[in-house]
Length: 113
Length: 115
Image (cartoon, rainbow over all chains, first blue to last red; front, side):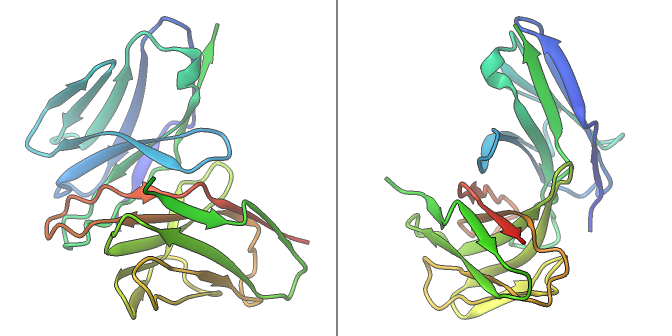
């Protein structure tokens, strides 16, 4: 399997940028996903990046991928209180057509007004 | 509206009892998954199924069982053999694309508490 590491907590002020980092071990992962989980709820897909890309931007979200270092980051610009949630990094397993996902422990983002 | 439903949202059981968690999807997805989430932990895969009448163990299948008799349904039974069943259980589904692209759609979860 794949090991995925994330820091557990991040606190920012409203309006600042948030950067959530993730490291993984399987360099052959083709798709890498970011999911968001609000309290007591399921996960929702935020964005993803394909392994042949270095960066992907989607409105306030920017994903950076450093394949050499096996490092993925999610930047949220102009962070709002509604962004407070747990964010999961989830690389996909290239070794199967199922594309099985491996989840990190999640980063709890707290946004202060 | 298409989506995944899990019921009930909260479930309480006495130790030693089996309990079945429901998961239904109307997205016409091929694959379905069950994950367990504990506080401060990531999601751990219990079982998954790519096709009706077939399923595979994930990383923590001991003490759990599943069935896939219909494409839209993937119930999970937590048996008395599961040592620490209290957790938040999440069901997900995805289309099988033939590539490793696998956007999974999640249900709202069931919180199981064993007393």
